[in-house]
Image (cartoon, rainbow, N blue to C red; front, side):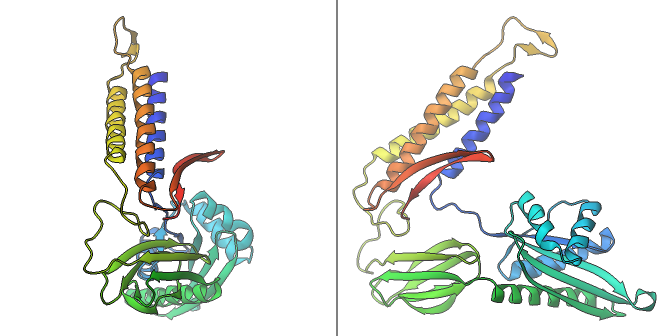
Length: 341
């Protein structure tokens, strides 16, 4: 049992390390959507409409699996004006950057008027905006339109009140036309105000090859994007070259080391899979296959070789270089690469 538990822990650590070593990997900002105040069947329709509206605005959405009790507590807290105290805990629990909270209620004689109230909070508990819409004696399509209208208004107001999120775009040579998410933003060098999340930045300049970069920028942050354009009559660099890096000086060694590391990792995983416990079907067995120690050694060697290979790949051909880094904290650990990408 100990062997098997350790096996799963080791495999999890390997996956974490390999994912952390991927250059440029970053999590797009996420928004939690909470909908309360209606029956589960009706809530599903409201949630679907709200989610589609939020995603169409470029925000990534998750729906935390809250029971009715905690969900009601959250909405009661927010409705009483104490959201700054209770919202951060909910957002921290689900590792999101903002919360969009919707409450559906009724007013008027016989509850003929539906009211949808919305709030948008930052993770730290700052209320960005609150608003509401009324729908009197309306059927499902009209109510759906009210939800969509409210969520659109919340997003617009939240972006206006949040700190500006900027892309500082530079090209070598200057003067390239810059398109952000398919729309012309101007000519480099320039600063472009964008919403938080994932963006595609495209550069084009007569006589040079078009270049494209995908960036992830946080709410209220600034990010620099610098690209050296390649003349159209010059052959493109061979092999994977990181954004901003120049080709050259990279021999086969990094690829050999990386391939060897991946092979060792595969071998280690296989050895873990082949390991057998001394107790099988509740009985002690005399002969069993114990490959744990060998698996740990092979896997560790593979992780190190893969990390070194990735580092060499990133380091080659870039004057600023890059280096592998790792850290351990009470909440977990990570392995990655730092440098100028």
